[in-house]
Length: 367
Ligand SMILES: *Cc1c(COP(=O)(O)O)cnc(C)c1O
Image 1 (spheres, rainbow, N blue to C red):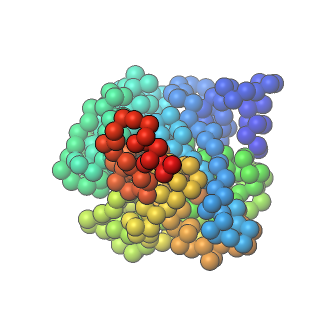
Image 2 (image 1 turned 180 degrees about the vertical axis):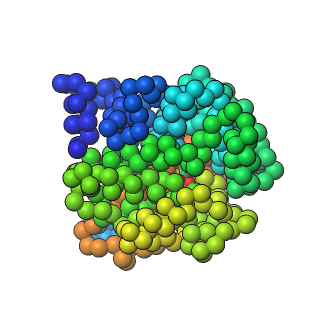
Image 3 (image 1 turned 135 degrees about the vertical axis):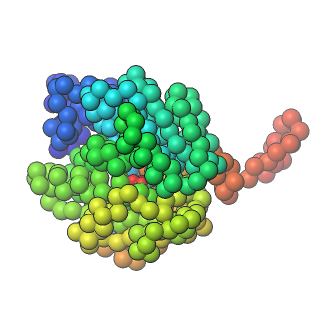
């Protein structure tokens, strides 16, 4: 069902302002009822941006598109899951939510919980959360608890707390998260009129890859597409448990959003890979940064380092992409989340300390 049809069901002459958020747009696919209070910031309907420079690098008529989920209200795809998780928590009468997070989940949980009039507690690995994400959690009014341990440890603690105390867990163990996130697959099919041949996606806790696979399957079963994509999941080399086949005790990568050693949704991700004849592969931090810079300076798209793993992976596997294939790379988060990585890793000329006169500026410009 093309995106415009989704809107037309809401009124005869839809405008973009009519986009009601993903729960109302895709209501019949989601476990909500009239009794569910929809807590939304109008997330979803993110653009699928053609990537001519990357397409050219792959060659052979391959068409690469970027699903830029960094344009969601809090700047990452986590909003898709959080609108569902928080709406269902509200419906159940919950007054507080808790999550462990490498940053984006806490930003989304904070925004949606506060929007719904709930308290938000977020546990983050002390010192390993990008600055923009921390700023968001604080500004949205979360209670931020930085623990001296990695994400996996923080998750173990919040699971325990949610078991013992009256707070709702909104990590991707919460089944409503994946339900909301699957709408990204619907949007891709609605925009293309068919599923892509490949879906390239960064993998941390593996919730997103599992959710996309669920979405593609549900849409195909309903006749909205004829094919299913190969699910190509990319992990950072220092945090690649699904590639290695075992837990990584001290995950390490510049891509903090996927700095995860023990993925919560491992089983679902393995199923997605096996059923789709897809693959998991590791990309190095150097490859991630190459792709990150290429996306910025080649395509004009600023994503965060973890997101660039999808493009790094595609470039690594480019020989295998079938001629004329359509490839969607998921850009999970906005580059503004992590300005320090951009300032440190770029190929631009940054001329500082110049005398404030035209002659100096013109000379530096090369005139
Ligand atoms: C959460 C996140 C990921 C990883 O998604 P999973 O569902 O944990 O695999 C990737 N990129 C960004 C920007 C994220 O916030």
